Length: 159
Image (cartoon, rainbow, N blue to C red; front, side):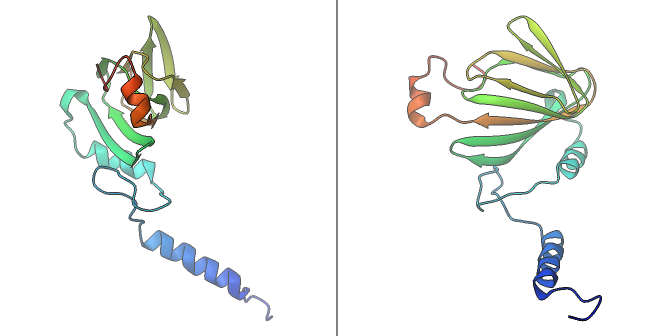
């Protein structure tokens, strides 16, 4: 092999990586329902795009990035002092702060979450969220099966 020339497999890998950057993946329908078997998101771009949609109703904006029957990922952006009233999710959740500072209140206890913090919460636990500053976070929900939903005492998001 000549000096400076790459192995054919490496050249193909580089071409594929270039094509991936040039052609964004079509991963989901408008509601976030997954089409492909994999997905990649530029979260900084998603946050920037959401900020262009201001003013937001109730001081926050949510976009479902990924949705399957058993799993959801939602990007939520909140303006400083915005609050999401007490609610619950039917599945186990995680809140991963990407930007800013949130207070997640559960059972009378406040949890301060800054950029880079991750908080998990079991299904059906009531909580509220407030933004101490302009913030963005990923809400991940492990969605229960239809049978599990039917058996739950408290049904429906936010009730």
